[in-house]
Length: 308
Ligand SMILES: Cc1cc2nc3c(=O)[nH]c(=O)nc-3n(C[C@H](O)[C@H](O)[C@H](O)COP(=O)(O)O)c2cc1C
Ligand SMILES: Nc1ncnc2c1ncn2[C@@H]1O[C@H](COP(=O)(O)OP(=O)(O)OP(=O)(O)O)[C@@H](O)[C@H]1O
Image (cartoon, rainbow, N blue to C red; front, side, top):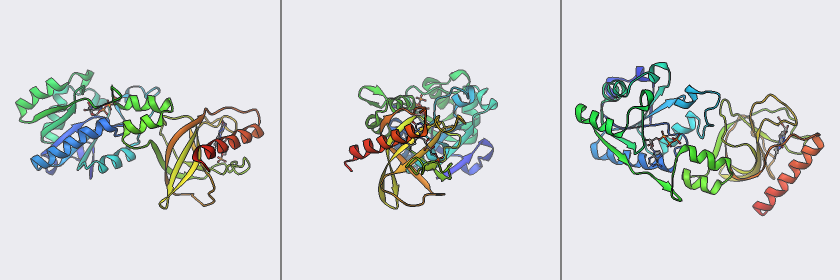
């Protein structure tokens, strides 16, 4: 899969493709249905399938303080798009220039001049352009003028409700991991590199792998039963995502994982933490002893659930 960062990196050879546009945060089952159609179009028309995404996502640009948490960082999103058979991703920087583009300009500059789009797949509710003025009818009209076809995919629903990134975030916040798995088409996970922590964990009876979240605002908070694949073996564990109010108050979110019955070195490795069940909210304890006792109870609860 080829990644093109910004319109300025589009070359004449990129012209001529079938395309779709959106945030694709989480690459959920609704997105996967569109991507399946894109693959079929690509085979039928013998053209590469291109996905146009935005970074940052528009809401992160408009209100950085209270944009929703991300299900996938750019890196994870790209990896998932690749597994969906996407040939090319055009990642547009969402900035003032893009924000001020009218729907008409977006079609002309990006879809026609930049990508030479021959066929476009969108969801039935898709809107774009300054003030979200571009919709399916608008695209169809443009297509007739500029010589590309447009199709709208039917809404993909689960339990009678449309699947969306927003819904996945809500379901995760409610701790419904089996529904989240159905919406995503895979269990929810967070990947990252293991960094050195404050080495306090051992004193608390809980050595932990500190997974780097960088700027990711995770859609989860609290203590969870998790698993991690290591060298082809599923290691069972317990994770905390939060600001660790008992021991430090830098306000930053940390993801820490303790693997049960495991005694290896994970520093520097990239791991994927799969979430299975919420055990409790993170709390501020009055003493390290109280935190230690709570962590011990978390381990016992996770062991009982795993049947260990
Ligand atoms: C299962 C588990 C539950 C935790 N729960 C809390 C909590 O409720 N409140 C809190 O302040 N820290 C909590 N922590 C974070 C610990 O404070 C943290 O792991 C410890 O400070 C070790 O940090 P270090 O690895 O940077 O040394 C939890 C950690 C784990 C592994
Ligand atoms: N459940 C779905 N069924 C059909 N198409 C979908 C579905 N979800 C998203 N799409 C389409 O996939 C493309 C990308 O969607 P996008 O990521 O922008 O929105 P979303 O998943 O609905 O997220 P949000 O909750 O942020 O609105 C758009 O064309 C959108 O209409």
